[in-house]
Length: 116
Image (cartoon, rainbow, N blue to C red; front, side):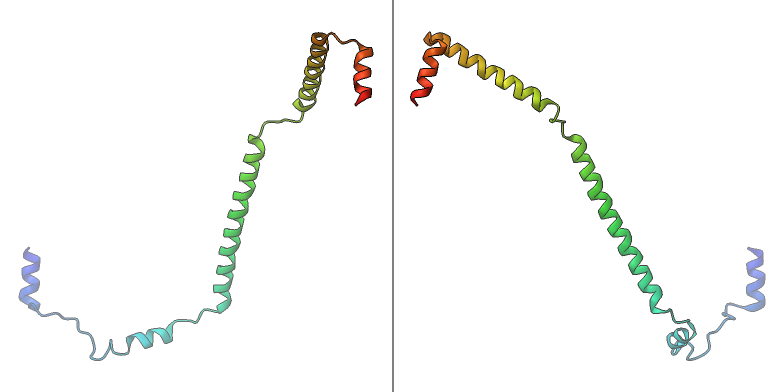
């Protein structure tokens, strides 16, 4: 604290720094004149780049969603012929059972089919 008292005794409490009068009146216009102008193309390039990034993100979402849907579905193609064969066998068995129940032989079945 002794340093502060020494400076205060020597200089006093006044502020040695002052702003010239009217400095802030034209400050904004002077600053704008000193700034370099940006070309419009730089803004357009940034805008295009952000649009490309957004489009790439959307495309990635669609592709990953389609891949997820494709991978989550069970493969039905190899089982389809097996299921069709099983259905035909069960149909033939049911026809045979019905014929046995009615006690029809082949000759009677042919006769019934030919009448219709």
